[in-house]
Image (cartoon, rainbow, N blue to C red; front, side, top):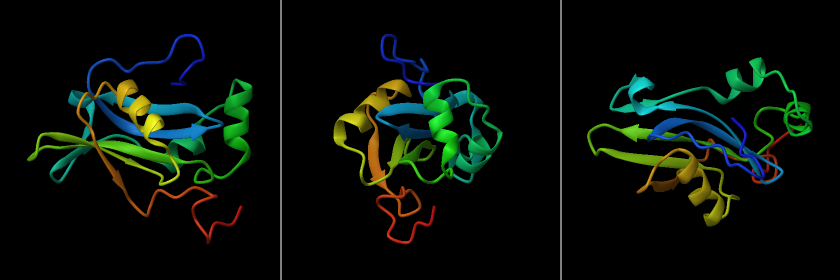
Length: 131
């Protein structure tokens, strides 16, 4: 889904999945929590690389996304921790608080925990990134 200018895409019920931020627009792949993939004590969905690899661009924004490597743009994921009964939104460190709240809204999460993970570093944030 793409976060549109006029009608923001919303997932609806609390969801898990991955996202990218391309030119201040959100591009994400999410499923309702009940349809997520269990992994240990968590429930998640999707792979950034697999999403990028199989994605067929149809708009200018989507073509821009596919011009660069999957990890060039800021990205992250929403994961549900079953024991703690909480959603954690992992995100690239360059994403501002307002973008994180917009993402939480799109994923239908009212009380997210925001976290950083060194795995999520875009071309700008990662000093070792090679395009």
